[in-house]
Length: 455
Image (cartoon, rainbow, N blue to C red; front, side, top):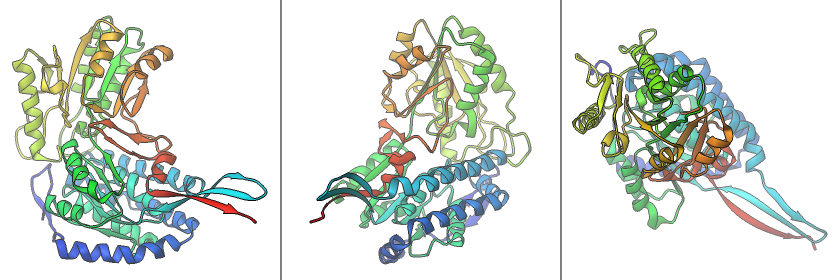
């Protein structure tokens, strides 16, 4: 399997892929090791995962260079991702004992009722390339904390980072028979679905998530799906400091080249503030520096997958054909690398793909609306349900709108952020199940009710 640098289109590694025989061998090893790992006291498992986080911090420059070389994000954004993973690990490890220890639900002179949180067993984690440290941390860290062993398959577009993760987990003290990595592309992922794991957790596209869910459903084991989004954002008529809002929401749309499940993917702006907002938004986007992701000051790096260039370009052309206007960007950059200009479209509507289909790239449509009611109707006009954001000077106004959006996360005066303290979950085509928070810690357990009679 060849690993290609998306910024240079050069092959930077050639890796040996797993096959059915090697995957079965790894699964057998993990099955044997899971009970031993679960027997390790929770406090020691916590200490091991905290050491893993410390090792990532100590080696952040090495890890960042590897990440940037294979996914194309600017070097500073790679550092930000690794630091963000450290913050998530901190919350998960500091709260593991609280939420994974048994709970006494009731107790009297004769009877004690207890919930025990037992591990699922061997967990299969099929992960994503856009934020491999973050989306990986969402799954393998709480899974290991809960006493599961894990077979982790990084995306073929971030396998070198997956190998870095494995290296530092093992160095921190996670044994070989508690964590294994699967190397390969689609065929390897399909083979994993045929094996008997005790739970499947996938991060990626709706189409692949649907395929995985249908494939593993007969096994009757947990299947968590963290899928894509077409995340809406609304700027209400009473929004203040439009320049600041435009800068923050542009970052929400274009950070990591828009390659995030919770990136702002479509924007609705009340007609009272529309002109000012668009002016400031375009000004901010035009200030972004594109180019070699290892250069200082670069904000827009290369798209990770060459195929996504065609998806983004097709959406732009479809919108223009149907009446949209390009205010900046609109085409692939010439020369080597998977570079696309950060693109802003206006005069858009829901007949255009850019307002309905996931873009996962540096393009955004901004649509003018006349009322909160119109904005809400458009925000809900989607098959996805990951996040929704409202910018308003009134919390009650924003809360009223967000209460009516069918999404797993709501934002007031912010966007494109994830907190380890809050559950991360999707609705409709954005998936189901939750990671992070206490819900995410317990997602990798199976509760057992214990009725304990004293006499």
